[in-house]
Each structure stands twice: as C-alpha cells, then as structure tokens.
Image (cartoon, rainbow, N blue to C red):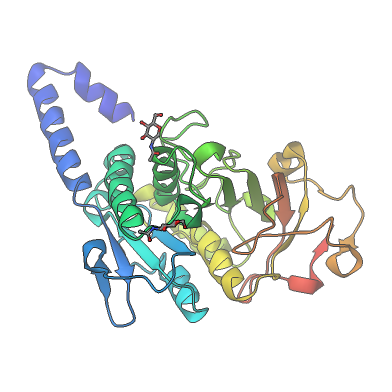
Length: 321
Ligand SMILES: *[C@@H]1O[C@H](CO)[C@@H](O)[C@H](O)[C@H]1NC(C)=O
Ligand SMILES: *[C@@H]1O[C@H](CO)[C@@H](O)[C@H](O)[C@H]1NC(C)=O
C-alpha cells in the first residue's frame, strides 16, 4: 500500500507508469471468466445448453496466485462432484491473480464485476433464481464473492467466505466481504494474523481453533510461509478453511461449534465458561454445524476445535473446554 501511494507523489513520469499499470490491470481483470464443470470437461458458460436442474448453482472463486485448477480450491469442486451436486462452476481470474499481491487485491472490484455480469446472463438464460446461487470464495476470492453478491443487491441465496484475505483490507473496505452480500453469509476464519482476518464478515462467523494461525497440524509449515511473507499462495492454516469446508460437504455434522463471545475469540480464552462440555451431551439447540449444511438460523460467533489431520472435524467426539 505504501508503495502505491508513493508512486503518485513521485515525478510525473512515474505517475504515468502507474496509470499504464492500472490500465493493464483492468485489461487483465477483464480476462476473468466462469467455467461450468461438465462430466468430461469444463465449459465456458455460453456453451452450456440446458441444465438438468435449476435448484442449485455453486460458484467457487479462488484466491491470490490461484486458477480454476489450483490445488487450493480443487477439494471443494471434487467434494461437490462426489456428492452429486449439480451446476458446479469455477471462476477463473488467474490473469489478475498472478501479479504482486497489491495489484491482485486492487483487481477485486473489477474482477467481481466481470464475473457478476457473466453469472447474471447465465442465470437469466437458464431461468435460475438468484436464491438458488451459492458462491464460495477463498482468500481474495472471498472478497470477490462478496462483491458479486453486492452486484446482485444481496439477493443471492448464500455467500461463503473461506478465510477472507486480511492484507490491505480493513473492516470498512468497500470491496470487502460483508454480511449484506447475500441472504445468508457464512465465514470460516483460520489464519489470523497471516493471510486471514478475524473481522466478522458474515451473518455467522466460525472461528476454528479461535481463527488463529497456526492451525493444528500447520505449526511447522506456517513458519516457512510467514518467512516468505505474502509471495506464497499456499499457507497451511489459510488453506485449512477450504479443507474443513470440503470435508463438511460429505460429512455434514462433522464440525459442531458453540456460540462464543467476541472477546473470548480475540483473546483465545475459554468459550464455555471453563466447563468442559461434549457434543454428545448437548442438545441441538446449542450446537451449530459449520460447513455446507450450516444451520441457517445461526448468527454471530461460533467456536470449534479441529484435528490436526483428516478427518479434521471431531464430530460427535467434539468437546468444548
Ligand atoms: C421461469 O421460472 C418461473 C418460476 O420458477 C416460471 O414461472 C417460468 O415459467 C419460467 N420461465 C421459463 C421461460 O422457463
Ligand atoms: C441492484 O440495484 C440497483 C439500484 O436499485 C439496480 O439498478 C440494479 O439493477 C440491481 N441489480 C440487480 C442485479 O438486481
């Protein structure tokens, strides 16, 4: 950010270079597109003739340094396909995502606009209601998902933010994911303070292991990534949000969570007033399930612990200390 501001205070020549850069960033952002996941291959949306069902559309959006086949999002696609979900689509904004982070972050609004228009055409051509649409975005893709939701004035059914990107975003950034992005917005936090954010951004926000890095099982990998700062796309804790979500698609009740105060989450203190409670002893009123089958009446903040390796969810054996 400091660098961007500096450029504009430098002599005129540099300002011109900066403007050129902005022009090319816009051009790269406009190369974004959505791909429909067919049985054999993926297709651009215009190639899709007819839908067998208009009840559900899933749109996955990758993050910084990603692409539509990047391993940071493939687990989501694969889990949806394996469970027989229809109309799985993946946004590809790789031309604008594979720049320096500050530029990719600046591309969020334009990329979202391009994708939103493409989605809008597809929905009206196939007579799909806005409510049937669920966008799942990771990292910068979570903010793009939010912006697409804003384009539709909050009329989409659901937006899921998987560890929304923290760097160069504030809670007030106009192009960031916010609770009004859709009728229901659920967010999973896993990587504060590296790439991920603790800022509540959803109707409901889940703080896995208090949302802080390192997540269990990521202790050593995260250190390596942090030392390279944000040049690395793949942070273990940052990507955990994706893996948790992907696991929940096939195992709907694997991530029980309990309500927790904002202060307790920030300070990583107890969420159950020092009492150890197990899910087995709680009734469904107190437990909310994180992930694909999240309880849509859930609001505010939830806490849960996870295992260090798959299956990450603790299911019926979960305890809250
Ligand atoms: C579109 O959907 C609406 C409501 O689901 C239905 O009433 C209408 O007939 C559909 N139109 C077309 C062209 O399929
Ligand atoms: C969102 O609201 C604006 C202003 O009311 C309107 O012009 C626009 O068409 C709406 N967009 C959609 C996708 O409904």
